Length: 372
View 1 (cartoon, rainbow, N blue to C red):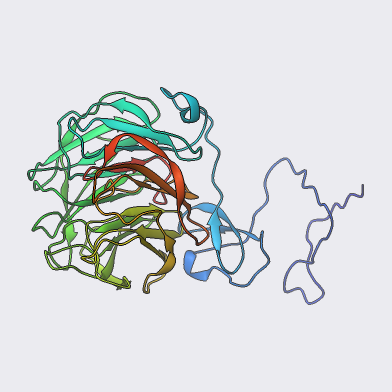
View 2 (view 1 turned 90 degrees about the vertical axis):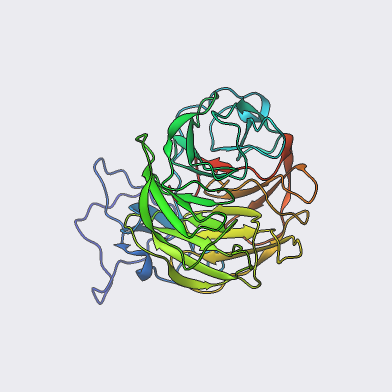
């Protein structure tokens, strides 16, 4: 083994570093500074495995090739998840959801491990047609039928019943929700263009964020660490527009692009740090198609693959880890099916397992979605 001790390495023209081949071990005891820049300045067509620091997201990311692009490096969870058995123990990200069978009690799965759901606990108020949002530790259940203004919360890593968090600024159902690590934003709902937000770590009532371009029920929702995405929805006419907000500020939506077809009564919503994936829903015909967008840019959604079934009103919210998305239950008949797909690639969904009870018209949330 050879050892090189130098203060600086550069190429012949002093325009960059040289290529070091073979197995190279870095044994410095302090730190090294990787290349850095914002999301817009990401290089393209570089060597897979290239490393950089994203100043927008404050995370390291690496290049997985031209068809996938830059992917955030996921920190390993160091604390085990509580309350699970079988496939739902150990480390990983958890998805919590409820569905269409009263009482609308909560269920959960560990996203990294294929298997069936288990009981989590009961809602504080027995509501459906609500929407889920979450930080990495706390999940929120927003609104519900009939125009409830309730916000409930759970601690994701343990099991137990939901507790009261506060109230939305306006009661509504069939709404959407998105979140970062700090903020949860409730969006639209039946006959509503309202957006309001709370700080997830602190209980309390929601305050005004801004407005959608029009009333919107059952939209697709997604988030990166900086942006929130609202796609499709009914007004009650069906929309194909994709809009976005900047989560850390307040204000009205800005145009992003379009879905291939007008779509509402959302199917699956899943996000990594870079991609949002939408599946199922009504056009108004029920579909099984999946599309995706790259959240840091603007533009139209493009084809991803297909779900294992045609479905709508899948549990509302974002149910994903940084790498895997789930589609939990849904209609036209109440379903216990859970689909899974890998967000960084394209392709068809596969069977993940089954819910404890049929799931649809309810909500979903997770501890590892792309907004965290």
